[in-house]
Structure formats: structure tokens, C-alpha cells
Length: 205
Image (tube, rainbow, N blue to C red; front, side, top):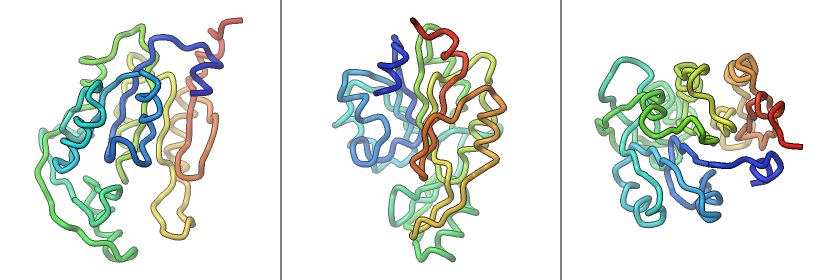
């Protein structure tokens, strides 16, 4: 909220990829409570009704994000839903090294992040992108058309999972955003918040 007010941003919308719980530990719920609206992308069918109940003003996309030319993919539902993932490597690591369990796998539809922009993003919008997809954050950002589809603010999980807060930062992800003219504005250890540098030059006096 501070960035929105300090930069005097108008026409705010958000794209919440990996919404999970629409209220608890959710990066866009405060925005919703302040009457902003956006898109919630969540592949776990068990969470869809809860999102509709508590975020009726948002658009729910019941799908995952495609990083390759695929229309569906296997989704690993873990014993803690915040760890759900499309990555078999991540799921297997959670089981082997972190004592987690795979409850089930489900086949879910996919949509590309650029298609989401084409369908729901107006060029006059200042878009806030929240991204938390357990292992595929870098690949999704890498697939983004940075010339055409530039979020104003990006909040992304930038550290690998650990139970004792010893996870390593994803330096490759951070470098990707810095190299696309984003500024690392803030860091909570788990999440990093980036600001489009071009907004700073347009900041009202």
C-alpha cells in the first residue's frame, strides 16, 4: 500500500498467481480489503470455493501457468497446501528432505502468463504481480513479454523452502528482474518486492 500511495499510482489491478488461501498469508488480500480488484490464479480445486466466497469481486482462473507448450499438467497436492507445486522435482525434494507428503496428484488446465495479460490487462493499468508457485517462479517470469507486459510492482517468493529459515536466495531470479530494469525495493527474506524503474522517472512531483 505504501508504494501505491507514495508513487501516486492509479488504475491499480493485481494478478495473484498461486493465490492459495484468499486471506491467510495472501499478498493481495490487503489490496482487496482496500477495494482494489484483480485476478486470482489457483490450480487447486479444493481452494476454488473459498476464493469465490471471500473474494467475490475478483476473477478466479482455475488453472496453472504454462511455461511450455502444454494445455494441462500434473499438479502435486501436498500435505500443506502452501507447498503445492507443478514441479515433480520440488515435490520429491519436499518428501525426501523435508518430511512432507504428497496427498494426491491432479491434472489441471494451463494458461500462459502472456495470455492472461492479453485477456485481462489494460495498458493503462498499473499491475501488481504476486507470484508464488513453488519452484516455477523463475520460468514464469522468464516467459513474460517484458516489452509488452510490464507489471508496475512484482512480489515474488525468492527463497527456497526450508523449515528453519536457512533456504538460499534464488539469485538467478533476482538477476532476471534486475536485468529487465526492475529495482529491488524491499525484501522480507521469503518474498522480494521489485519496482519497475520506469515508474520512478514518471513519478509526479
